[in-house]
Amino acid sequence: MENQLVIQGDLIESDALRYTPAGIPILKFRLTHHSKQSEAGAIRDVGCELDVVAFEAQARLLATAPLGTSLKIEGFLDRKTRSGRAVTLHANQIEFVATKKT
Image (cartoon, rainbow, N blue to C red; front, top):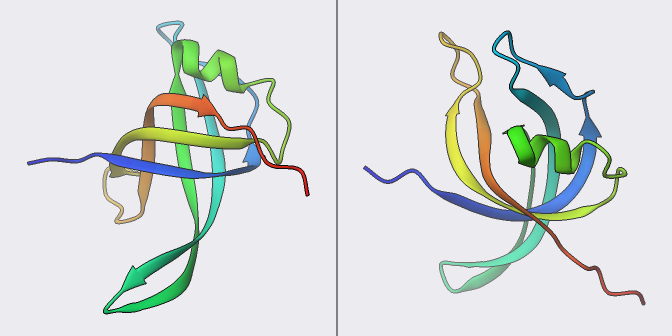
């Protein structure tokens, strides 16, 4: 089965960079997304907030990013906790997105 997600949004929360017992850098953060999507022949406004986790180089890269930074994230979804139903996006690739100044 496939489990891939690509989403673009803005960084709204970020924990401090920490390390697993094995010494792997890990960063948990939250992304907000707003866009217009076509559904059933109509355009609708959609939005969500999503918990994201990044490891190693991706975690170090994002650790210094200021809140409000626009990001494109590619990764997969997994349960936030072993027994829970909430999901977290595990980032495999993070790209900084330039925003247009108006």
